[in-house]
Amino acid sequence: MRKQALSGYRLGMPELVPSTVTMADVAEAAGVSVSTVSHVVNGTRKVNETTARAVRAAIESTGYTHDRVARSLATGRTLTVGLAMSALSNPYFAEAAHSIERAAAEAGYSLLLADTHDEPAGEFRAIQDILGRRVDGVILAPSADPLNTLELLRRRRIPTVVIDRFVPADVDQIASENIAATTELVRHLAALGHERIGAVAGLEGLSTSEERLEGYRRGLTEASLAFDPELVVRGDSDDTPAEAALARLLRVRRPPTALVVSNNKMTIGVMRGLRRAGLSVPEDMALVAFDDFEWADLFHPRLTTVAQATTQMGREAVNMLVSRIADPTLAARKVRLEPTFVHRESCGCPPN
Image (cartoon, rainbow, N blue to C red):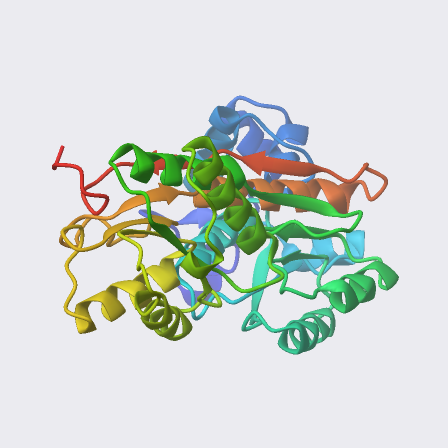
């Protein structure tokens, strides 16, 4: 075939397919309306997942290529959303970022990621950088003091969804339920006979840290155990501070026999600190933690945790943002997702 003869075709798999495939062709292949195809491609309205899968399959089989530049010119949008969180240093956020990226791609958006390092100043700079790219919206896992960042987003009228941590602002938000889940962890340890239950709490000021600490106190109350401030230390939501906090906790006059750790990075620090202190889990110290992570089932003993619905949170955050972009007049929404108690052996229970 001469090179000139290829001008109306592009290479397809497994054969040459026309480059002039339209939405109407995709709609016919999927057995849906053109408007439904448009909603799936442009993310302008939620479509039943079964229908959306059929549309995506038809797009692949027909070789349809959506012209993002044309859509951008027509709508005045960049088809890009920003994600600001401490994703590079926290495996929990890395999982959330992956879910957000996939959901954004399915909705027709590219993702621009900026690491906030969980610091207010770093968060503000990250959002400034993102806004400099003219994104259509922002998903933010806020720092302990996000008010300046949120005010900047409000002034710029940027559609925003806050993820993982609630903030006192009139903005769309989605996060896990923290109080009841942590209460359940404490009750479980108390039911196993522990009376000295310590807590390694997260960074002060984060809603997740304070809610999980409240859950810890409620768990003690429900188990008829007195709250002892000596048994609560701050691990600042990271592994090295958590290891140092554990060392302080082990030096109190009556150390705990069980621990509740408020996130996965601190759990790693606590386990390292226990090993360095020559203590075994659960023989010398029972351990339960908020946040499940990929290798929690591979530790010995396997970790008893509360698992957040991370994938669902990421997808729902994107859905909320896309609907906010489409209709800025929507009332602000707050969504709580129920986590799951994952019972393993680090609490002192026998293997399942």
